[in-house]
Image (cartoon, rainbow, N blue to C red; front, top):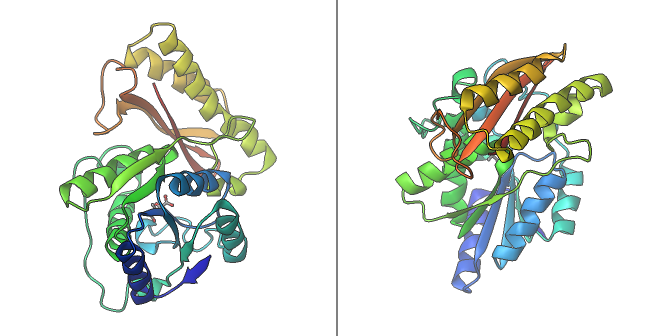
Length: 280
Ligand code: PAF
């Protein structure tokens, strides 16, 4: 496995792979890798001849009061995980490499990015779309593998990929959960044991909604009311949003359309912000 830090070296390496007819899958990450990321790398290895993992804590997608400074950075452990999972190249550029002095070009998606996360994290998707477009241009992968855990991110990246003719096939990997049901996330390490116990309310609320849909319930108001009620049982949990939306457009719907709608949740567990979702 090779580690690359400069854009020019990454471009040359990816061009070499393409010249040899090898398909390339990119797994964009911010590091602090867990089993969920490992599953993305494994899926990428099944899709393409060469797997490139990017590790870049992207300042542009954090708001001023968010956790950019304390976001976990553990490059050595991340490299070991990438190697074990079958990555061929890890691209770890510096902030100065991606956003040199005077940098002034940003990409905004203006529909899918607006609701849900877009309301409470207004600069987030502008940062995500900008860095992802840059990574796609640098690597020019055939595939990019993303996790369903960040459902709105998936939808936004699919949209910019189509709108800007980026020519990358977006592959979505299912959310991995710990045995207690908590969706794997680099931010779970911020949780104390008691906070984690309350955080399980999110996956329970999602499971309950799935059960209700399996039993024939389609009305969004009833499903959301039940999910909100379950979340409200937990003292440390403050709901930011609980919404059933179309999985591609993120627009609110009135009725569940099985397979096409998701229940998306975001909540504070004390000072830790968590998101989760399930396809209903
Ligand atoms: O999901 C993430 O880790 C990030 O938002 C991404 C896609 C790597 C862009 O920085």
